[in-house]
Length: 167
Picture 1 (cartoon, helix red, strand yellow):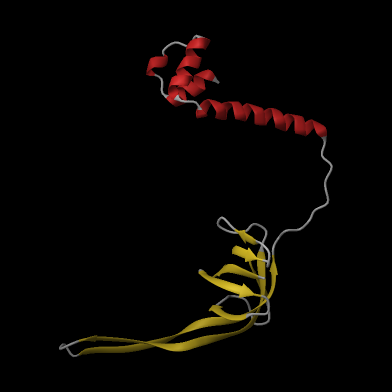
Picture 2 (cartoon, helix red, strand yellow):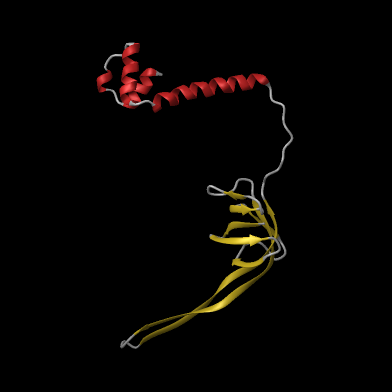
């Protein structure tokens, strides 16, 4: 099982018990951290892709230590000008160990719902479907429907105005 997770603006492919270096985290050494910006999960048999992230999924990790990475040398030179500058820096990083990958798919026991709210919900859905049906018609079809209802001034109406007039 592995996951693609975004940590400090960078994407990492992580597996359980994996150690990796990331940009410096604010957590103290020995603390546990969790990353909820999981972009993809593969649990062996199926993939779960997020848009942009997988809902309910998270990756738990433990901060092992804070340290600095290898020195990076920055050398600038302009030829024939006598200009040379040598600088360097060491990036602050954190070593973490992935302790667990949670998919967020928890099976919930079925909850009994009252029948009255279901009826109200179906009525709302049917009203919305009618409005969506009107917007799916072409302008010519909407004008014909408006003529049948006896609406005047349809020749100068746009599609949105026709939909409003018919609803």
